[in-house]
Every structure is written in structure tokens, then in C-alpha cells.
Length: 368
Image (cartoon, rainbow, N blue to C red; front, side, top):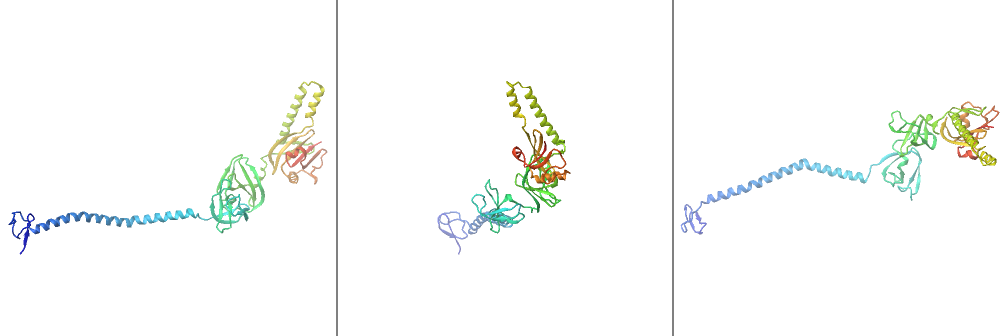
């Protein structure tokens, strides 16, 4: 027989009793208690279920969309870090005979050998000091080469060396990256810009080294070579009379005007005695007047002119044999001794001496 327990006094009563027989407290049916407990349980279970569902959805979204991105980012970071610590090897070409050194520095390093011009090398770029600049560490472990001697463009063969001759541009001139017809424009020189002339190519380009260390090419090599000494100048010369015309003639006319003005000033000056006058005249008479020039003539470098007491001279920064060759090509008859033939006056080409040696290597002189 089923019974109920009183929640107030603990006495038992019949299952169908509504009140406790001992204390009169109201008795609740057992089924009702179970229903209350079940409802409470359902109220608590709903929030937990919702949270569990949300967590499951979030986990699924993370797995589908975010995890892969994080993995890719991680892989990219690892790759970038690897590239930073292991830079990619690059291909370069030697633009000149370059030293191979055991360290990426000039000071304190040992020369291991030579890298001939045009050689292809592979390596990774290493920084250098402000003096040394960058270096290429060769992948084969054979040493280091200064980047200043390298280029990523293979150089052409030089048919004639210009011995690193400096040249000051006499106007705007284009510098090309290669000698190919479709070459990119590397730079454009302005008048006054200085470059180093390295040599000429078979297709009439001049390889140059720019002030910032880059290598490039100037078109029309013959034209450039004719202007090496400076802006071109014309030389009109008559060895029979020792007369110069054109621009050179104009320069000598200016010198003559200066000398006449100097003599006129002496003649107008009051001297304390005739002895003092003669001494002043002697200090001027017979002295040569030199003028420095930097001009070019048919590939020659004209470096100066001079007016002597009874003769005139042109000075060139070229060997006598070369000067003779150029003037012969202009139609002048010059003997093996360097003298212009068929003249009553002295006219000849020879190595400079005395004061003239300070103005050039070769003198073209004419006069008494």
C-alpha cells in the first residue's frame, strides 16, 4: 500500500490522504513533485544545450575557414624568414678583371685569384662598409667579389681599350643599358657630367662607367672619340706663313692684343731713369704667353697655345706620332722627322720641352 510522508512532521499517511493525520499539514501528490522537478530540470538543460550547439557551430566554422588561413600565414612567415636568412642566389657578369677575395672587404682580405671580364658568377649579395660597398658571395664557395665590378647584363667584347679615360660630356647625351637595338635608356647625361670611358665595341658603342658605378653605352663612338679633348675646335694652319685661321687664329689675335696693350702701357709709363725703362722692357721682351685650352681636334686633345717672341705653338695631350698622323690625314706633307715639307720657316711637330712641357706632350710650332 502506498503511503505519503508529511514534509512538516514526518508522519506517514495513506496515499490518498490530502492532509497529515498527525499535524494536519497539506500533503502534495508524489506525481506533482516529480513534475515540478522535471520542469526545473528542463529549464536548466535548455541553456546548456544552446551553449553546446553554439560551441559546435563555432568549432566547425574555425575548422572550415580560419584554420587553413592561419596555417597559410604561418607557412608564409616561415618562408619569408627563411628567405631573409638565406637570400636567393643571383647571376652577375664581371665588367672588368675583378679580384676574388677571401672576405667581403678590401682591408685585411687576401686576393684568391682573378675573375676575367665577361665571366658569369652566381652568388648572394652581402653588405659591405661605406668604403667597400656591397659584395657577392659566390655560391661555389670560391670567395667574394665587389659588386662595383659586376653587372646583371653580360658585357659585349671591347675591341679597343680607352684605358679608363675620363670624359666630360659636352651636351645632353643618352646612355643605353646595352648595345642592342631594343635597349632601355639607362640615363641621360647633362653637359658637364663626367664619365669614365672604358672601351669601344665592334658595333661602334663606347662602354662607360657612370659616377654612381653603373655601366652603360654611348652610341656613335667615332663622334665621341673626336670630342674627347673637349668641345671640337677647327684648326686652320698655313705652314708657309705660320698663320692660323678660324678659332685658333682668333685665340692668337686675342693674345696679340693683350701683348700690344702691355707694351703700350710700358711706353706710356714714366720711369725714374732710362735704365729703369730698359729693365722693364727686358722683363717683358722675349717672354712667352701661354693659354690653357681644353678642346678636341679630330680625336686629338688640344690643351694649350702659346705666343712666343717670333713663333707660335699648339700643345696636345697626345703622343707626337699620333699628332703627325692626324695632320697628315688632313692633307699636310710631314716628313719622318716631323717637319712640314716645302717651307722656308720652321714648322714641325715634336715632343714638348722646357716651359711647354707643362701644357702638353706634343708641340706643333711654327716661326723663325
